[in-house]
Image (cartoon, rainbow, N blue to C red):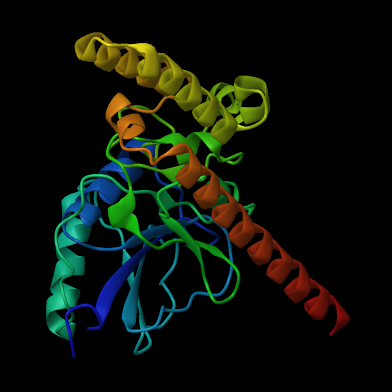
Length: 286
């Protein structure tokens, strides 16, 4: 068995019924600590079935009011004790070692964590991301599939999420860093989320237009240094409009590739939404 297919320990931070809610500061610190130790982490704040993914054991961590449910071979429970997030991470480490599970590696500096208690599976992030970070599970749910493709310091997918359900624990400000979401956050993020108002309806059209105009200017420009500065200015302006670092803008593919990738992402999102609708129809019929 290869390291990629070996069983691993996944962590679910649970704040649903039967558990006490965590403060934003503690939640962010706990996420940060678990991710640094190489644990894949998800967050849930509502009731629902809990199942382990294939080739994994699920550790459910929460501030349980009463005794947590009985453990199974694939699902374990851990009650939070005390204000130190490192204690919970150490106990998770102990369980991983006891079970002889693979340690995937230390935390990649930057990738998204989905708060499934807030996520409505609208597929906005899948339609938006040009770097193929997101995918669709076998049941039609959104998931972080290619986290290594994520661009450091780029929180753009979190900003297009209508429910503020995408977190980056190393981001500088809440609620994107996992802090509590309040009404002011929702209003501020909504201004960034409204792509139609911000970018005239099509973010990719904006990028294509900027690239085409820049290309026209560059073709007439004989001074290489001035041309480079103009290209950098265009990238900076586009990045400022979307809150994306200039180095991420510089790594964008060609306008044609942007169009192709955007259409593929949007097609996958439509297929996922259609699958959800079909499943709901079947459930209602039964």
